[in-house]
Length: 165
Image (cartoon, rainbow, N blue to C red; front, side, top):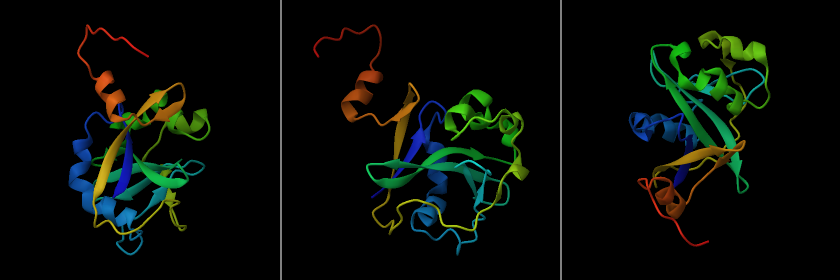
């Protein structure tokens, strides 16, 4: 089973990616070039977009975890409206970028991305076992994957009494 990460808090609901599973499976199996998905990259950064249909693009980056490279889904841009995307708000974008450059943060548009010739640095393979979306929490400059117990504790209704170590 392939794992796809997404940034919980920026992506409010993982269901927005459900209708793009076919496209995600093509990326994960390494077929994005032959499937004519028009992969583009923001120059100087590991932020990519790939065409979903004539109007929409999927925004993602890559991340290393336990020696493997994974996709981290960032957002879906609909109707070429990059300015409406929450991931391109300066506060969010600063945490995503490999380096901080104020001029890059000023205005990212559809034309900011360039075609990519090299292959993505992700672990690819058959997707017949499916795809699992895993949320990441951002804390102190780190993206953290919570286990089931931690996730349940985070979602407990307040007020709550917590004891133990």
